[in-house]
Length: 90
Image 1 (cartoon, one colour):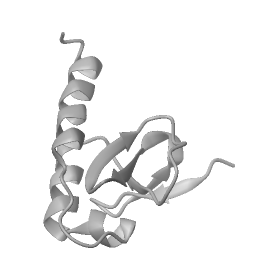
Image 2: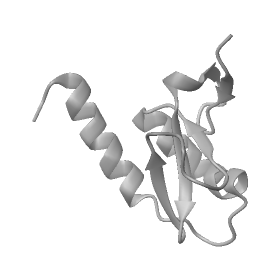
Image 3: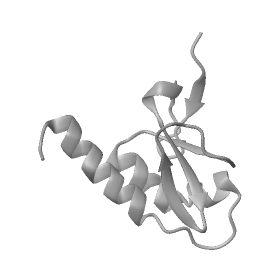
Image 4: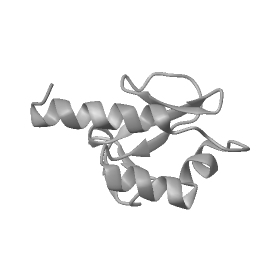
């Protein structure tokens, strides 16, 4: 049986393989594609709507138990490049 996690954006449960693990490194949200970085992780669907919802709800800070503002520019850039890879764009 495959592990199940909850997306911090849409709050839907999904297999771990379908979600992206995100960690905070020096107040910056970083994608953990190999799922092996140390520390707490937040799980997220690799979809713009889930990222926007999680940012609006301040779910990353709550889930990662981080105080202060977290910078999400790396996650947004990763999501853009991920979408281009999936769609076949360069």
